Image 1 (cartoon, rainbow, N blue to C red):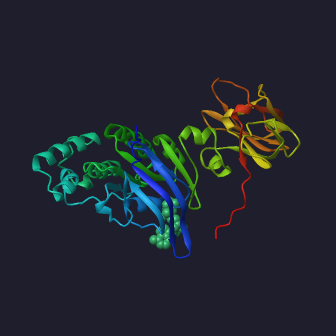
Image 2: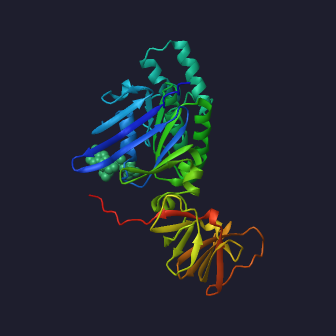
Image 3: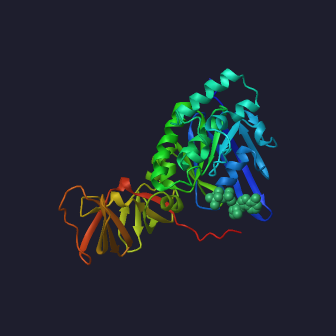
Length: 358
Ligand code: ATP
Protein backbone atom coordinates (compact mmCIF):
# COMPACT_ATOMS: atom_id res chain seq x y z
CA UNK A 1 0.00 0.00 0.00
CA UNK A 2 1.43 3.37 -0.99
CA UNK A 3 1.70 5.62 2.05
CA UNK A 4 -0.18 8.89 1.85
CA UNK A 5 2.28 11.76 1.32
CA UNK A 6 2.92 13.94 4.36
CA UNK A 7 0.86 17.14 4.34
CA UNK A 8 4.04 19.18 4.77
CA UNK A 9 7.55 18.05 3.91
CA UNK A 10 10.54 20.28 4.53
CA UNK A 11 13.65 18.87 2.96
CA UNK A 12 17.06 20.12 4.04
CA UNK A 13 16.00 23.76 4.04
CA UNK A 14 18.50 26.54 4.65
CA UNK A 15 17.61 30.22 4.99
CA UNK A 16 20.25 32.91 5.08
CA UNK A 17 19.72 36.60 5.67
CA UNK A 18 23.04 37.96 4.35
CA UNK A 19 25.64 36.50 6.72
CA UNK A 20 23.12 35.19 9.24
CA UNK A 21 22.02 31.58 8.94
CA UNK A 22 18.49 31.69 10.38
CA UNK A 23 17.58 28.12 9.39
CA UNK A 24 20.42 25.69 9.08
CA UNK A 25 19.36 22.56 7.21
CA UNK A 26 15.96 21.54 8.55
CA UNK A 27 14.08 18.43 7.44
CA UNK A 28 10.72 17.36 8.76
CA UNK A 29 7.51 15.65 7.74
CA UNK A 30 4.10 16.50 9.12
CA UNK A 31 1.48 13.77 8.72
CA UNK A 32 -2.00 14.63 7.51
CA UNK A 33 -4.40 15.75 10.21
CA UNK A 34 -1.81 16.17 12.95
CA UNK A 35 -1.10 19.02 15.32
CA UNK A 36 2.57 19.88 14.95
CA UNK A 37 4.46 22.45 17.03
CA UNK A 38 7.76 24.15 16.39
CA UNK A 39 9.16 25.14 19.76
CA UNK A 40 12.27 27.04 20.67
CA UNK A 41 13.75 30.19 22.15
CA UNK A 42 13.60 33.56 20.45
CA UNK A 43 15.73 33.64 17.30
CA UNK A 44 15.97 29.85 16.80
CA UNK A 45 14.42 30.06 13.33
CA UNK A 46 10.93 28.71 13.98
CA UNK A 47 9.01 31.69 12.56
CA UNK A 48 11.24 31.78 9.50
CA UNK A 49 10.53 28.08 8.91
CA UNK A 50 6.78 28.69 9.24
CA UNK A 51 6.97 31.68 6.90
CA UNK A 52 8.76 29.56 4.30
CA UNK A 53 5.97 26.96 4.47
CA UNK A 54 3.43 29.77 4.05
CA UNK A 55 5.29 31.36 1.16
CA UNK A 56 6.19 34.63 2.92
CA UNK A 57 9.90 33.80 2.63
CA UNK A 58 11.74 31.61 0.13
CA UNK A 59 14.45 29.17 1.20
CA UNK A 60 18.04 29.83 0.20
CA UNK A 61 18.26 26.12 -0.58
CA UNK A 62 16.22 22.97 -0.04
CA UNK A 63 12.67 21.97 -0.94
CA UNK A 64 9.21 22.37 0.60
CA UNK A 65 6.28 20.15 -0.38
CA UNK A 66 2.60 20.48 0.45
CA UNK A 67 1.29 17.01 -0.27
CA UNK A 68 3.26 15.96 -3.33
CA UNK A 69 3.53 19.47 -4.75
CA UNK A 70 6.81 21.36 -4.58
CA UNK A 71 5.73 24.87 -3.55
CA UNK A 72 9.03 26.75 -3.56
CA UNK A 73 8.55 29.86 -5.67
CA UNK A 74 4.75 29.90 -5.34
CA UNK A 75 3.23 33.01 -3.69
CA UNK A 76 1.22 32.50 -0.47
CA UNK A 77 -2.18 32.74 -2.18
CA UNK A 78 -1.31 29.88 -4.51
CA UNK A 79 -0.44 27.56 -1.64
CA UNK A 80 -3.12 25.53 0.04
CA UNK A 81 -2.41 27.07 3.44
CA UNK A 82 -3.83 29.80 5.65
CA UNK A 83 -2.02 31.61 8.42
CA UNK A 84 -3.26 32.96 11.74
CA UNK A 85 -0.97 35.58 13.24
CA UNK A 86 -0.65 36.94 16.75
CA UNK A 87 -2.32 40.16 15.61
CA UNK A 88 -5.76 39.19 14.42
CA UNK A 89 -5.93 41.80 11.64
CA UNK A 90 -9.72 41.64 11.37
CA UNK A 91 -11.54 44.24 9.30
CA UNK A 92 -12.85 46.60 12.02
CA UNK A 93 -15.78 48.04 10.06
CA UNK A 94 -17.15 44.62 9.07
CA UNK A 95 -19.27 42.28 11.18
CA UNK A 96 -17.89 38.98 12.41
CA UNK A 97 -19.96 37.18 9.79
CA UNK A 98 -18.57 39.35 6.97
CA UNK A 99 -15.02 38.96 8.25
CA UNK A 100 -15.37 35.20 8.13
CA UNK A 101 -17.09 35.25 4.73
CA UNK A 102 -14.45 37.47 3.12
CA UNK A 103 -12.20 34.79 1.61
CA UNK A 104 -15.12 32.79 0.21
CA UNK A 105 -16.70 35.87 -1.37
CA UNK A 106 -13.47 36.75 -3.10
CA UNK A 107 -13.37 33.24 -4.51
CA UNK A 108 -16.94 33.68 -5.73
CA UNK A 109 -18.28 30.70 -3.81
CA UNK A 110 -22.11 30.53 -4.23
CA UNK A 111 -24.03 32.66 -1.72
CA UNK A 112 -25.94 29.76 -0.12
CA UNK A 113 -22.79 27.82 0.46
CA UNK A 114 -21.03 30.84 1.97
CA UNK A 115 -23.90 31.35 4.38
CA UNK A 116 -23.84 27.74 5.49
CA UNK A 117 -20.07 27.47 5.87
CA UNK A 118 -19.76 30.78 7.72
CA UNK A 119 -22.45 29.84 10.25
CA UNK A 120 -20.81 26.46 10.79
CA UNK A 121 -17.44 28.06 11.44
CA UNK A 122 -18.81 30.71 13.79
CA UNK A 123 -20.42 27.94 15.76
CA UNK A 124 -17.30 25.77 15.70
CA UNK A 125 -15.21 28.50 17.33
CA UNK A 126 -17.86 29.08 20.00
CA UNK A 127 -19.29 32.40 18.78
CA UNK A 128 -22.79 31.31 17.77
CA UNK A 129 -25.15 34.28 17.99
CA UNK A 130 -22.37 36.87 17.73
CA UNK A 131 -22.21 37.01 13.93
CA UNK A 132 -23.67 40.52 13.70
CA UNK A 133 -21.28 42.30 16.05
CA UNK A 134 -18.11 44.18 15.09
CA UNK A 135 -14.65 43.00 16.21
CA UNK A 136 -14.24 45.82 18.76
CA UNK A 137 -17.24 44.48 20.66
CA UNK A 138 -15.36 41.23 21.30
CA UNK A 139 -12.57 40.35 23.74
CA UNK A 140 -9.05 39.49 22.53
CA UNK A 141 -9.73 35.78 22.84
CA UNK A 142 -12.97 36.07 20.90
CA UNK A 143 -11.26 38.10 18.17
CA UNK A 144 -8.64 35.39 17.86
CA UNK A 145 -11.47 32.85 17.42
CA UNK A 146 -12.80 34.97 14.55
CA UNK A 147 -9.35 35.02 12.96
CA UNK A 148 -9.29 31.25 13.27
CA UNK A 149 -12.76 30.88 11.74
CA UNK A 150 -11.77 33.18 8.89
CA UNK A 151 -8.78 30.97 8.08
CA UNK A 152 -10.51 27.61 8.55
CA UNK A 153 -13.57 28.50 6.47
CA UNK A 154 -11.34 28.24 3.39
CA UNK A 155 -10.65 24.59 4.26
CA UNK A 156 -6.91 24.84 3.67
CA UNK A 157 -4.76 21.73 3.59
CA UNK A 158 -2.65 23.21 6.36
CA UNK A 159 -3.28 25.93 8.93
CA UNK A 160 -0.19 27.82 10.09
CA UNK A 161 -0.36 29.46 13.52
CA UNK A 162 2.30 32.02 14.39
CA UNK A 163 2.19 32.52 18.19
CA UNK A 164 -1.58 32.99 17.90
CA UNK A 165 -2.16 33.15 21.65
CA UNK A 166 0.78 35.44 22.41
CA UNK A 167 -1.36 38.53 23.02
CA UNK A 168 -3.74 36.87 25.48
CA UNK A 169 -3.43 36.82 29.24
CA UNK A 170 -2.40 33.58 30.92
CA UNK A 171 -5.84 32.33 31.92
CA UNK A 172 -7.35 32.97 28.51
CA UNK A 173 -4.33 31.46 26.81
CA UNK A 174 -4.76 28.22 28.74
CA UNK A 175 -8.43 28.08 27.87
CA UNK A 176 -7.70 28.77 24.19
CA UNK A 177 -5.03 26.04 24.10
CA UNK A 178 -7.65 23.44 24.90
CA UNK A 179 -10.12 25.06 22.50
CA UNK A 180 -7.60 25.06 19.67
CA UNK A 181 -6.90 21.40 20.23
CA UNK A 182 -10.60 20.60 20.17
CA UNK A 183 -11.13 22.63 17.00
CA UNK A 184 -8.19 20.91 15.29
CA UNK A 185 -9.64 17.57 16.29
CA UNK A 186 -13.09 18.52 14.97
CA UNK A 187 -11.93 19.83 11.58
CA UNK A 188 -9.12 17.31 11.06
CA UNK A 189 -6.94 19.87 9.25
CA UNK A 190 -3.16 19.79 9.81
CA UNK A 191 -2.10 22.56 12.21
CA UNK A 192 1.48 23.84 12.37
CA UNK A 193 1.97 25.97 15.42
CA UNK A 194 4.95 28.13 16.37
CA UNK A 195 5.56 28.93 20.03
CA UNK A 196 8.32 29.59 22.54
CA UNK A 197 6.10 28.30 25.35
CA UNK A 198 6.90 24.67 26.15
CA UNK A 199 3.74 24.11 28.13
CA UNK A 200 1.65 25.38 25.26
CA UNK A 201 3.36 23.03 22.80
CA UNK A 202 3.04 20.08 25.19
CA UNK A 203 -0.66 20.75 25.81
CA UNK A 204 -1.63 20.88 22.18
CA UNK A 205 0.74 19.10 19.85
CA UNK A 206 0.96 15.47 18.74
CA UNK A 207 4.55 16.06 17.62
CA UNK A 208 6.98 18.80 18.58
CA UNK A 209 10.17 19.89 16.83
CA UNK A 210 12.41 21.48 19.45
CA UNK A 211 14.60 24.02 17.68
CA UNK A 212 17.82 25.73 18.66
CA UNK A 213 20.24 27.81 16.60
CA UNK A 214 18.46 27.15 13.32
CA UNK A 215 18.36 23.36 13.73
CA UNK A 216 16.01 20.73 15.09
CA UNK A 217 17.47 19.39 18.33
CA UNK A 218 14.84 16.68 18.68
CA UNK A 219 11.51 15.79 17.15
CA UNK A 220 8.99 13.63 18.97
CA UNK A 221 5.79 13.38 20.94
CA UNK A 222 5.52 15.43 24.15
CA UNK A 223 6.02 12.25 26.19
CA UNK A 224 9.13 11.18 24.26
CA UNK A 225 10.69 14.62 24.57
CA UNK A 226 9.94 14.84 28.27
CA UNK A 227 10.83 11.28 29.24
CA UNK A 228 13.81 10.79 26.93
CA UNK A 229 15.40 14.08 25.97
CA UNK A 230 18.40 13.47 23.74
CA UNK A 231 20.26 16.69 24.43
CA UNK A 232 20.90 18.88 27.44
CA UNK A 233 19.14 21.70 25.61
CA UNK A 234 15.90 19.70 25.23
CA UNK A 235 16.13 18.48 28.84
CA UNK A 236 16.39 22.06 30.04
CA UNK A 237 13.87 23.61 27.69
CA UNK A 238 11.00 21.20 28.40
CA UNK A 239 10.33 21.26 32.11
CA UNK A 240 12.94 21.13 34.82
CA UNK A 241 15.81 18.64 34.81
CA UNK A 242 18.62 17.69 37.12
CA UNK A 243 21.78 17.21 35.08
CA UNK A 244 24.95 15.76 36.62
CA UNK A 245 28.20 15.36 34.74
CA UNK A 246 29.88 12.01 34.52
CA UNK A 247 31.60 9.49 32.28
CA UNK A 248 30.23 6.28 30.81
CA UNK A 249 31.97 3.29 32.36
CA UNK A 250 30.17 0.50 30.52
CA UNK A 251 27.46 -2.05 31.11
CA UNK A 252 24.93 0.67 31.77
CA UNK A 253 26.96 2.51 34.39
CA UNK A 254 27.93 6.19 34.57
CA UNK A 255 30.52 7.42 37.10
CA UNK A 256 29.66 10.87 38.46
CA UNK A 257 32.15 13.60 39.37
CA UNK A 258 32.33 12.43 43.02
CA UNK A 259 33.04 8.83 41.99
CA UNK A 260 29.54 7.53 42.77
CA UNK A 261 28.27 5.19 40.07
CA UNK A 262 24.69 5.31 38.81
CA UNK A 263 22.84 3.02 36.43
CA UNK A 264 21.28 4.26 33.21
CA UNK A 265 20.57 3.20 29.67
CA UNK A 266 23.77 4.29 27.90
CA UNK A 267 22.87 2.94 24.45
CA UNK A 268 24.49 5.07 21.77
CA UNK A 269 26.58 7.28 24.07
CA UNK A 270 30.09 7.02 25.43
CA UNK A 271 32.78 9.15 27.04
CA UNK A 272 31.90 12.37 28.85
CA UNK A 273 28.16 12.70 29.35
CA UNK A 274 25.57 14.20 31.65
CA UNK A 275 22.90 12.11 33.31
CA UNK A 276 19.50 13.56 33.92
CA UNK A 277 16.48 12.91 36.08
CA UNK A 278 13.29 14.90 36.46
CA UNK A 279 12.70 16.42 39.92
CA UNK A 280 9.39 14.60 40.43
CA UNK A 281 11.16 11.27 39.91
CA UNK A 282 13.63 11.80 42.73
CA UNK A 283 12.67 10.73 46.23
CA UNK A 284 13.94 11.74 49.61
CA UNK A 285 15.25 8.47 51.01
CA UNK A 286 13.38 5.91 48.94
CA UNK A 287 14.56 2.66 47.48
CA UNK A 288 15.78 3.77 44.03
CA UNK A 289 18.99 2.03 42.89
CA UNK A 290 20.63 5.38 42.04
CA UNK A 291 21.52 7.13 45.29
CA UNK A 292 23.36 10.21 46.46
CA UNK A 293 24.02 11.66 49.90
CA UNK A 294 23.66 15.38 50.38
CA UNK A 295 22.57 18.33 52.47
CA UNK A 296 19.29 20.25 52.09
CA UNK A 297 20.13 23.76 50.95
CA UNK A 298 16.67 25.19 50.53
CA UNK A 299 13.03 24.26 50.47
CA UNK A 300 10.14 26.10 48.85
CA UNK A 301 6.48 25.27 49.24
CA UNK A 302 4.76 25.60 45.87
CA UNK A 303 1.28 24.25 46.64
CA UNK A 304 1.05 20.86 44.96
CA UNK A 305 4.66 20.08 45.84
CA UNK A 306 7.55 21.21 47.96
CA UNK A 307 10.69 21.92 45.98
CA UNK A 308 13.78 20.81 47.86
CA UNK A 309 17.30 21.58 46.64
CA UNK A 310 19.86 19.07 47.87
CA UNK A 311 23.55 19.83 47.56
CA UNK A 312 25.55 16.69 46.75
CA UNK A 313 29.23 16.29 45.86
CA UNK A 314 28.12 15.36 42.32
CA UNK A 315 26.04 18.54 41.92
CA UNK A 316 22.71 19.97 43.08
CA UNK A 317 19.58 17.83 42.87
CA UNK A 318 16.12 19.37 42.95
CA UNK A 319 13.36 17.15 44.33
CA UNK A 320 9.64 17.80 43.83
CA UNK A 321 8.10 16.25 46.87
CA UNK A 322 4.33 15.84 46.35
CA UNK A 323 2.28 17.38 49.13
CA UNK A 324 -0.29 14.62 48.90
CA UNK A 325 -0.59 14.01 52.62
CA UNK A 326 -1.35 16.82 54.99
CA UNK A 327 1.33 17.21 57.64
CA UNK A 328 4.06 15.36 55.64
CA UNK A 329 7.49 16.02 57.09
CA UNK A 330 9.88 18.11 55.02
CA UNK A 331 13.50 18.07 56.20
CA UNK A 332 14.82 21.40 57.43
CA UNK A 333 17.56 23.34 55.67
CA UNK A 334 20.98 21.91 56.56
CA UNK A 335 19.74 18.33 57.22
CA UNK A 336 21.68 15.41 55.80
CA UNK A 337 19.51 13.35 53.43
CA UNK A 338 19.75 10.60 50.86
CA UNK A 339 18.05 11.07 47.51
CA UNK A 340 17.27 8.17 45.22
CA UNK A 341 15.74 7.47 41.83
CA UNK A 342 15.41 4.53 39.50
CA UNK A 343 17.71 3.70 36.55
CA UNK A 344 14.59 3.76 34.30
CA UNK A 345 13.97 7.41 35.20
CA UNK A 346 17.56 8.29 34.27
CA UNK A 347 18.39 9.66 30.83
CA UNK A 348 21.82 10.30 29.38
CA UNK A 349 22.78 13.22 27.13
CA UNK A 350 26.02 14.37 25.63
CA UNK A 351 27.74 17.13 27.54
CA UNK A 352 26.63 20.50 26.35
CA UNK A 353 29.37 22.13 24.32
CA UNK A 354 30.00 25.81 24.65
CA UNK A 355 28.52 26.57 21.27
CA UNK A 356 29.22 29.90 19.69
CA UNK A 357 27.15 30.93 16.73
CA UNK A 358 29.13 32.18 13.80
P1 ATP B 1 10.97 34.79 17.71
O1 ATP B 1 10.20 33.88 18.62
O2 ATP B 1 11.70 35.86 18.45
O3 ATP B 1 10.18 35.29 16.54
P2 ATP B 1 12.13 32.78 16.01
O4 ATP B 1 12.66 31.52 16.56
O5 ATP B 1 10.82 32.71 15.39
O6 ATP B 1 12.16 33.90 17.13
P3 ATP B 1 13.06 33.87 13.55
O7 ATP B 1 12.08 34.98 13.57
O8 ATP B 1 12.81 32.74 12.63
O9 ATP B 1 13.22 33.28 15.01
O10 ATP B 1 14.51 34.46 13.30
C1 ATP B 1 15.67 33.68 13.20
C2 ATP B 1 16.85 34.61 12.98
O11 ATP B 1 16.73 35.21 11.70
C3 ATP B 1 16.91 35.75 13.98
O12 ATP B 1 18.27 35.98 14.31
C4 ATP B 1 16.33 36.93 13.22
O13 ATP B 1 16.88 38.14 13.68
C5 ATP B 1 16.73 36.63 11.79
N1 ATP B 1 15.77 37.17 10.81
C6 ATP B 1 14.46 36.82 10.69
N2 ATP B 1 13.88 37.47 9.67
C7 ATP B 1 14.82 38.28 9.13
C8 ATP B 1 14.85 39.22 8.03
N3 ATP B 1 13.77 39.45 7.28
N4 ATP B 1 16.01 39.85 7.77
C9 ATP B 1 17.12 39.61 8.50
N5 ATP B 1 17.17 38.74 9.55
C10 ATP B 1 16.05 38.08 9.85
